[in-house]
Image 1: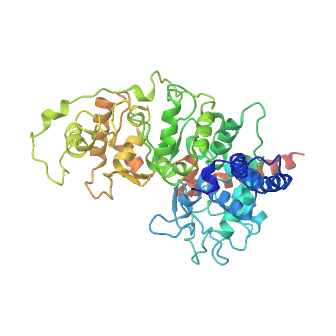
Image 2: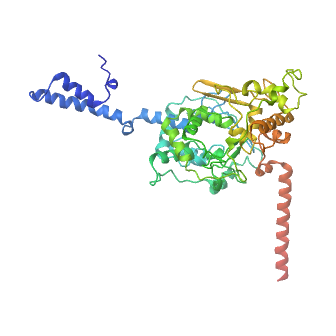
Image 3: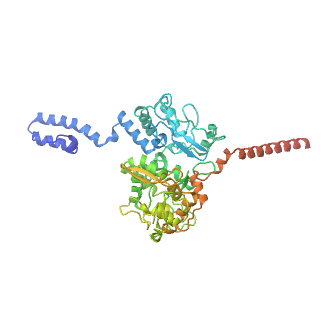
Length: 502
């Protein structure tokens, strides 16, 4: 007979089993005393096992910290994808101001955070200030982490200090151009945009909604990508979750709007997208979102994913100007390109090809099929009724063509080759990428969206340059300096004349 307690199903059944084996204790006081003590001894630990939240040990704290680090996606940014050690830093974050290298956050005392106290750790995570007083750049999403609770900070600290392997290696130094290399400038940025309120539950909402808000706005820091930035590169809270540029990619609108956002998605589609990166043919995760699914969301509990879905359902709807149809309703299947097969001989180097339909046949149709419906098993998605091809902003379509798609979920890799400068398959020019994108949009997607070679060049170069990034241009700085000097001189002369007139 199997005597393992977990197989019996709980302490009540254990006690019941003892009663059945020993017979009724009513006629035997010794049996009654034995069963009373035995049931108490068995019941207490098993009751605790049924309610693990009531038990707190050091191991539980470390385990919880590990889970929180996954929810916060710490490893994705603090691990160099080119063979780096976990949390040792070295990942190059492409910002409009230049490359920002992630730091070593292992408990190395020389190169990492091994000398950080709990409070110093908390200040770095929630306020962006290192133990030595230096300021972190907001590429570290401390503005979102500022809402983390003290209990979660304790758990994260325990995990990083006790369970992460120290890596005795320095991460590359971030060297931004002037004036962005002046880290003290972040004092002003923090004063303007850093909130310091810790998360408190909204008593008018249920536990699931509150958990979802904590994950979406705090740990998972979704707004950092999905919210547009203002002139100082801070999230524009008046347009929260309405979509934002993330380097070469565009993080789409995830408000509850039924046309521009995810209001037209089912709960099942949202759950599947967060957990697997797939929402049928409606959308597939690529770029930074694929990284989030691979390194973070797929490892979260189903309850946490459901909580995120519940909260996202209530994010105030924001509609893109002029949009009249949902992103995922555009396009029809078509096989017009089949007539192009055999028209000309294709070579490995298709540098002289410029027709979008012919390029589609050469580079795309073998996976997405000539009719744009993808494969029957849905491994290669349809381009019809797909959010990427249907949204007004074609940035993600361009980026997918240039950089491809890569994510691994559940041990299964999804891979689409890129056709950009580093392509191992076929390098396409800006004109050719624009031609393919326009063919896909006209045939399978949003016919109102257009792509120019200049659009492709912008995505290839890392995305649009925000106004503030121009401050790194010596010519612009020189002009600003001359204007500033002129203002000072004019002010000085004005004051001197006022004094002479008295």
